[in-house]
Image (tube, rainbow over all chains, first blue to last red; front, side, top):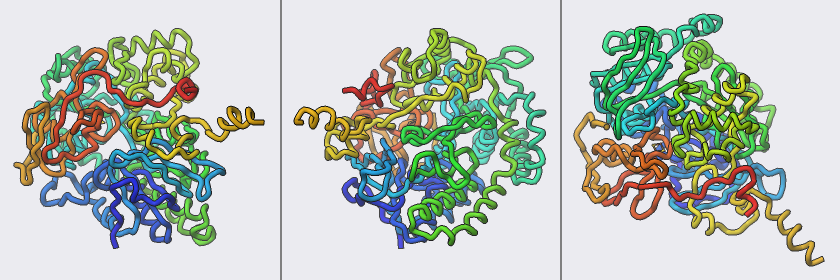
Length: 503
Length: 107
Ligand code: FES
């Protein structure tokens, strides 16, 4: 058996028991679990092949050709093979632009999802949806971060995994967190030299992290972390205690200026790789009306969900890093948990039959999460790199809105990020706030002396990803499509505008 | 700004702003461009600043290019193909954006 590869919108079914968004570890595991239980499953993904970002190109890579990717990467191989063996409908290259869970009004199921595939928009329905949208890099707004030649560390890893390409030296890696060191050692193993690592982690965090130390000491992170650090320290020029950073260059990266206790310095660079942790990709959950909550330890909003992945929206579940950062192994388990929960809620499997299994899986996930809190606290980003003090620093890359403009607009007293957005267009470009939402919230919290949880984040509506108008216009004008496109219920509309006149 | 660790084994031929280029089959267009030495794929509508792919995972929209006449394609989400005609974009992308705070939903 092998999954059905769907490449055109009209070869999708109109209805599925379970629709999964994202083919990373959580999504693939959810598909495996759900198809095993006999559910009709579709899995939509933006990328050309399964694996998500962590296991990017895992189906085509072999250790002999890319040994530098390391053992954690190759763990994805078995999972991807099991996924390929399911009878799920697998839809790569798909854009999901709207999602809604409805209590009634839909014959079967209660989730309506707007997708675009091969230039054609289509609405499909499902009894349950699992959002396995993964993580994005936490934005790191510093002067010059929009210059060509700057990539996120995640992007450099994607390039390495998917194409065996490496940034041109001299390379500067700047920021904090384990991924930055992992990338540095992967590049080393791939034969890259001439790297400088500017570590922005805050030495004052060490004390705060101490109370999470016991969990870390018994976790596999300890050994991995030490190995990485030792290797990196031997071969890379590492500068710690970074207080400020600026990427310099006219039309391309030319170097990085930084400040430490010893003063200012500049290193030349052709490529700059930025990273200060990852945060859940929440845009789709947010647009679907799932309540969000602030995670103080990870300093991010995430969909509010319970232990088994239920969100505040009926029929919508979250799994993996998109539900809160936990790493690939925890993501895989949480994908299985969400699938089992969804299927037992829609009646595909009996509730009592899965109690024991869910318990075992939750126990397994706790084991994988051990040690993370220590890393989260130790590598929490420094304030300067969350809320840039230089007023010229671009915050919203799309609309080129600077930190100074954001602060000026905040001084005018908008109640929250949504109103600020209409004042200065911050977050209104094509990325729809993905690259500025956290910064705007952090700056606003800072200016008002309050916690980000009080500030909130952008409220989103569909289309949650840009779709061509022509595609939307060609959708059959069914109520679900009208609702997804216009954001309001066409049935109400008819009642008030037409039928009342007829009476 | 990207260098290949191995020579091309299964080359794909495409063009960017009329200049012929090569990439490895299976590469995303964004990686293909960066590995072919193209760092500037577009200019912004506001200041005219040069931009290039940034996240390579569909999030930042810095990689928007015109592919075979279709504007605003995310180069990091599509695979490069033979005879692909890729153009840089100048100025603001013209895309239907989500509506904000009820304004657009009244139309
Ligand atoms: S490089 Fe970020 S969306 Fe393509």
